[in-house]
Amino acid sequence: MILRSINFYLLLLFYFVAPEDNFVYEYNPSNFKYQIEEMDGNFIMFYAPWCRHCTEFHPTWSELAELVNTKDSKFAIAQIDCTLHAKLCHDNDITGYPTLLYFHKNTFTPVEYKGTRDLPSLTLFLSEVFTMKTEGREDKQTSEVKVYSGMAYLNDLNIEKSLSKGQHFVMFYAPWCKSSQKLAPIWAQLAVHYAHNDYLQIGKVNCMDSDITCKNFDIKQYPYLMWIVNGRVMGIAEGDSLENLKAYVDTMLLTENHDPDKFMKKKKALPVARISEETFETFLEKELVFINFFAPWLIHFMKTC
Image (cartoon, rainbow, N blue to C red; front, side):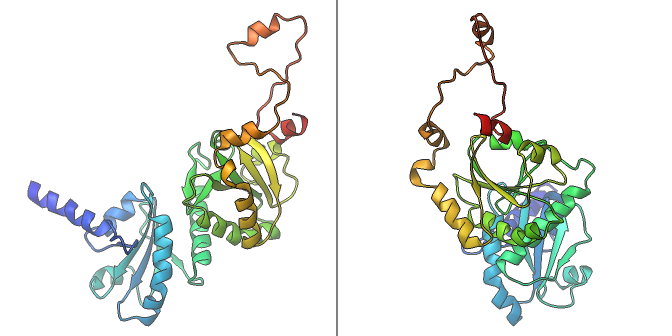
């Protein structure tokens, strides 16, 4: 019995670990149910090796897998060979190839992808189904920052901690806004492009769900793009094309700016004493003290500091 269990998990490991030249996970009847229950989301291509459309699409699918199937990721890009696992494909009502189905965690009623089979469209779809699942939960917002396909999903509960360290490029948007809708797929592409950049995190805030955050940042139009370093707003960007946004990011990510601490030190320091919790009472002993209580990430304070 023990040997059988060991063999079972070895089989799972064998199929779950992708070869170096293929980032797509291979699923089969032995690991399919386990992966749906274990992962937060599974985007699966049901295919046949003889299918010409499948063969032509495979490089794009592999590129998506390379972006998503990273270490510690709770989302997976996978595929199932229906010539080898006909019953599994039949159980999922597969009638043509390739068929792309997205399975939420513990959900065996998938969402079928019927859009264009290119990387930007696939990435946008993943962003939408992830947001749909998040909004369907009772605990609509969480203090945990979810990062998916290079995109950080920020809200009232997690934004302060998330933006307090490092460099961030954040889009504040409203789902009903046509300009936001137009920029959404481009922003998703931007997140994918910089997904493996150690010096930058692309993120977005839905101002309809996180109105407190958007009021604090004084957001009056959508979409609104902010460059934030160590919690401080360092730039406002404009651009409606991937090329323009990439150019802006590359300008901000100059070599000397890779270290946020050095970047901040380069800014002219103001002759203002910083008071900590430990020195607060000592400063109050002076004859006259004028104190500004602030949060560095609030746009109102950036205008006065």
